[in-house]
Image 1 (cartoon, rainbow, N blue to C red):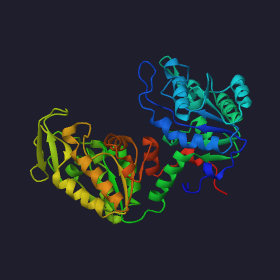
Image 2: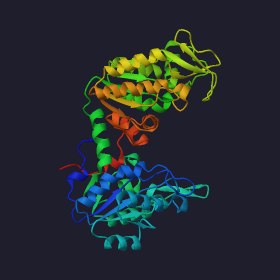
Image 3: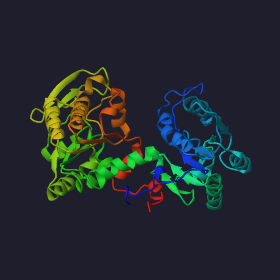
Amino acid sequence: MSLSSKLNITDVDLKGERVLIRVDFNVPMDKEGKITNPARIVAALPTIKYAIDNGAKSVILMSHLGRPDGSPNPKYSLKPVASKLSELLSKDVKFLPECVGDEVKSEVLKGENGQVFLLENLRFHIEEEGKGKKGDEKVKADPAAVKKFREQLTELGTVYINDAFGTAHRAHSSMVGVQLPKRAAGFLMKKELEYFAKVLEKPERPFLAILGGAKVADKIQLIENMLDQVNTLIICGGMSFTFKKTLDNVEIGTSLFDEAGSKQVKDLVEKAKKNNVKLVFPVDYVTADKFDKDAKTGSATDESGIPSDWMGLDCGPKSRELFAQTVAEAKTILWNGPAGVFEFPAFASGSNALLEACIKAAKNGSTVIVGGGDTATLVAQAGKEDELSHVSTGGGASLELLEGKTLPGVAELSEKK
């Protein structure tokens, strides 16, 4: 699946069209139904405005919110999003209390002059995800009903735009079931695909991946795929202890050790040797007497080992220098997973130092991409998103792409002619 050959919103003439856009409005709300962080709504504005400014007859927005498990639940209504969107667009947004059916269709067909509609939560229908819950029981959707639901969504538009990269790894009806002749990426999706194409299709070398996080077993596929692509690989965070103990018998105390993952360590190191990939691990640690933000802290090295009832929760000053030097040598940098438990200030220095090194590399002309999830949170907390080339909005989607998998929501987009 080539990422760079997909049809984009700018390749399509939208004049007079009913533009059906799959957005990601899965925003956090408080108990009163107030939106606590509108970032995802703001992120979709360029695509929505482009459709309006380029003469769309109407713009029909569809999204999920939370996990209502296939039946209506007022707690997960998108109604509050409609008023927020209206405020951000300075334009009336008509909220429809359903996402399919005759009433929705007749309302949408009446829309003109760039009218914006927001459909109710797609996941109120079991046919969106194909499965849901009745009480505590898991239930599957009827294939005929799924087919009908997809046809009903398709009828609403004349052009389909997908701007929900964060859901692109899910083969849900709104992602893969809208069978309009033109299916294009919106600006958010386009940016994600362009940057991941840069990394996965034609990286400028040397290419470095920084992989952190807790369990080796969860990242096996990612490490495997990266070993076929990169020149250098930094392994940090909790999973580095499994490597250190297995390879060099370093004393790791009560640090995270992944028994299942440890069985794969030697094979991964063999593959790195075979592919001429340089592996870089931490060499010293910030330790704690317990997993707690107020834990007592200490320090340890590979030689000294970590005392038997202490654990490593961050990498130490020598490792930070080693990582910064490794980052400075690379032309393309992909970062997925923090270097320590950055949620606790006492153990955030390793991740913050990596972030500083990445910002410096970006200033010096390297391409730096952060692959969603915890690392994106770290960058956002520091307010540094604009100082890196790209911070992905999709945790699960970016991970699957980096594991070498095809994303259903991307595969379904039309190819450029």
